[in-house]
Image (cartoon, rainbow, N blue to C red):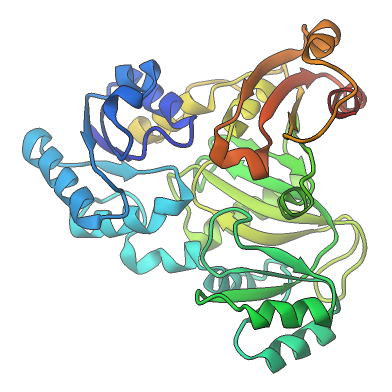
Length: 390
């Protein structure tokens, strides 16, 4: 099997996916803009071949790279980036080279455009916040009056929290319109609650997981420290809604990361406190070190599960009974902390499973210095958060 992997060096966990694919007998062919010498030892050892391009934004270069691989290795069976930014490129390449598995160019818009995504939610009867496509100032003012402040504005096509902001008043709304970006934006009703993700590896799920975190938008806008966690097992109500969402989007044979909000108060037309409402879908794994957190929470190997999905459309790993709350606490520059790293290691050394500096591109959303630990109880996990970030 020939698997073309776009941008295999980022996110950092892509190297783990490549390694497991190689171990399952896959011919992993990488295309990226990072020099070969800059790739990690794990990644270099997992790739059969690597084609360097000066820019992944240059479609002609990427097209020629795929054509070269086909000429040398014959048919491409699978093409993926596992990176939200490159999903439209993935789809275009699958179309141009008639690659059977995966979304093609005519189906990608509803998976990356938040306006079209919203329509899929509505058509499938999946609870979600109301949305307005940003056009004239009067329309935005009317929408904000109708749903109430604050409202969220964000690029219709965008990655993570980039370009998103919360508007608390008409004055802030007018300032937004005064400097309205050229790219399309949407405005959404603000829903109060925790963000909970549904992560799985196929339309008929081979693996399911849930993460819980406060809005990333606030962490970026207010320069807050970052905390979130992976639960030992997904909430049954959320899992049912996640499966329904996967079916609505036709998310077959992919690792997906859906975002829902668990309402902390009743919201007319959306749901009651404790209910879930869809925020957006991401047709790729959760970013950063999140796949590792899933592994630690469920004592499993999501990289292997993905590789076996690709090669066998099946899973061989049994479900583990050893399950944990896996906690992510990350410090940011410019903050002063009560406890040193030595203090953290002394108190939580047995519970820590990872500590590292995150890539600079992730600092605003994911923090800079990561401390990851796992605990049997939620209470101990919360005590860890307090100690690390005090």
